[in-house]
Image 1 (tube, one colour):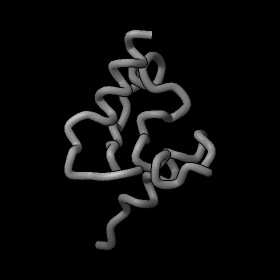
Image 2 (cartoon, rainbow, N blue to C red):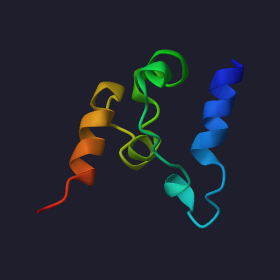
Image 3 (cartoon, one colour):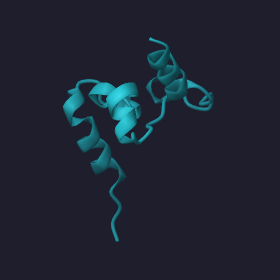
Amino acid sequence: KVALRLRAVSDHTGLQHNEGPFDTRTIVPTVFDRLFLAPHNSSYHFVHHTFAAIPCYNLKKIHNELVKTED
């Protein structure tokens, strides 16, 4: 429970310049993070707030689409 609270704090703290659903960040997870701190792709928190109807198993896919750049 402590780890989940720490994750929630890290997702939402220090972003006072953002408002509403954008008061969050994405933390690209390591294997440890995925196993113990961010199950169900919850570290893709910005995408979750922006596209709340997207199921958790598609959050990483949407994140990757949003960060693509043209060369």
